[in-house]
Image 1 (cartoon, helix red, strand yellow):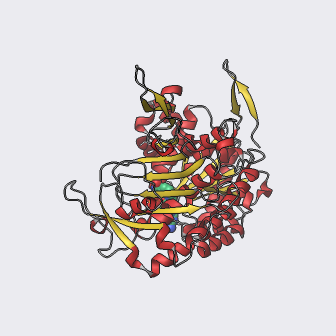
Image 2 (cartoon, helix red, strand yellow):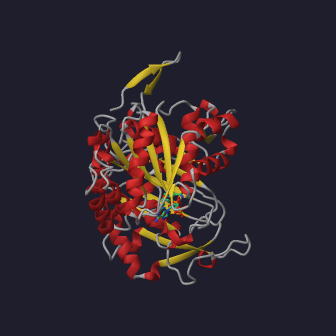
Image 3 (cartoon, protein in one colour):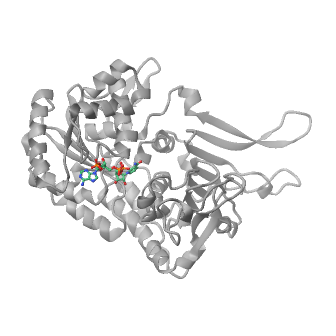
Amino acid sequence: MRRFITRGAREELCAEIKAESCGMVIFGASGDLARRKLLPALFELFRRQLLPANFFILGGARTEMDDDAFRRSVRESLAEAGSDSELEEFSGFCHYIAGSYEQPVLYEALKSRLAELEAGCLTGGNRIYYLATPPVLYPVITEGLGRAGLTSDAAGGWSRVVVEKPFGRDLVSARELDRALLRYLTEQQIYRIDHYLGKETVQNIMILRFANTIFEPVWNRQYIDHVQITVAETLGVENRAGYYDQTGALRDMFQNHMLEMLSLVAMEPPASFDGDRHRDEKVKLLRAIRPYSPWDMDQFLVRGQYAQNSDKNLPAYRQEPGIKSDSTTETYAAMQVMVDNWRWRGVPFYLRSGKRLARKVSEIAIAFKPVPHSMFAGLMPENLLSNVLVLAIQPEEGIALSMETKRPGPHMCMSSLNLQFSYRDVFGERSGNAYERLLLDCMAGDQTLFVRRDGAEVAWNVLDPILQQWQEETGSLCFYPAGAAGPEQAEALLAKDGRAWRPLGDR
Ligand SMILES: NC(=O)c1ccc[n+]([C@@H]2O[C@H](COP(=O)([O-])OP(=O)(O)OC[C@H]3O[C@@H](n4cnc5c(N)ncnc54)[C@H](OP(=O)(O)O)[C@@H]3O)[C@@H](O)[C@H]2O)c1
């Protein structure tokens, strides 16, 4: 349970997050996620003195290395992030154990290595196991840990397991994964991580909505016309072809980040910022999403793939290394979501996400209704631009509210302006890597920002019928030039309702 305290001269209200002494075992320590996200996040927590005093990292993978070689690789990968002395001190926390996770003998070796490190580092038997491996290994590792007696809390300390997305490929496999995890763990030990929930602006949705009174009265079907949620990337499939071609935009982005953001924007106020109260409301919201029926799906969904753009010298998805030349995997998806409850009935939520788009941007735009009556002769209510509240998530983090104002001068001229707040300008601080916050929460035993089992399942429940239909009916795939704003069909999705996407760049 989080407790808010006042801090500093400005009396900021801060939630106390107290990381408990622990050892963190990183399965897949030689991989991309560990190198690019986890170790930098842990290093930054170390620099900010937020790691517990009694702490160690035990990395593992098949690659043969001893502690010294692992420490060297850690220092090399973090070379830009700190001074030599900081890197030296941080790498002192790091240890390594080589082996294949399919081999039961590894878990016995892990057990004795942990006992040795825990005796030296006084971490009280508290362990975090971070699964940064290919997802097929999640059940294998959990079983190995369970059989070796490494997951029970009985030894005096606690054990927590962090599971990376994807949480299955569909509802059936998600349930299978849950069953496999729950054979050796309780739900309270499982931390399903969606790093979007660690982003400053995503967390700020809750502060904005529930720590201010001015938004809640207008946060409903009476005042909100529609909501747009966009996660656009300029990059293509990069070096993740094997993973991405099996996955696609719907599984990669919608099952987790997109539906998580939708639920935060639309959920009812939780009674407390407590793990389960908060997640109860998110799940309730996802359950209220109107199911798609096979015959009207095309009206509400767009499935796209990037095609070659010779002008911009960008290849087609099907020309990327490692991608089949007839792949039907979607690199873009857009959907209209209707939430059938008292607050949102009739308000469309338009979601879009894709690769190789014109601009990198993640944002949530809440478009308000036009004024009900115009007192300005000659102007109809719809001539006046409606207010739009934009929660910018990346690359810039901030909030903007557009509104109509009078231009200075003797004439009665109107123009739109933006009330804008940027995290960087106001707080002057870089926003941390989202993993920093989530790792800290895990060390503190706070599951609020992690995905609960029923949350992951209900998200699959929304997407499963779409995935099935798309698998059977490949004809619905449309193409957009790499580097453009997306497929024309996505424009039509909003145009049929007399609306338009917020511009993403030139088409
Ligand atoms: N990379 C990202 O940005 C990102 C973002 C979100 C989620 N994820 C998820 O995070 C997980 C890891 O992703 P990644 O990109 O880091 O993958 P990766 O670069 O392929 O790394 C996989 C790691 O697992 C180890 N490994 C694989 N098979 C093993 C085995 N049988 N026994 C022991 N170690 C084994 C590999 O090391 P060795 O080859 O040395 O054994 C490597 O350290 C995946 O589930 C992915 O979906 C990744």
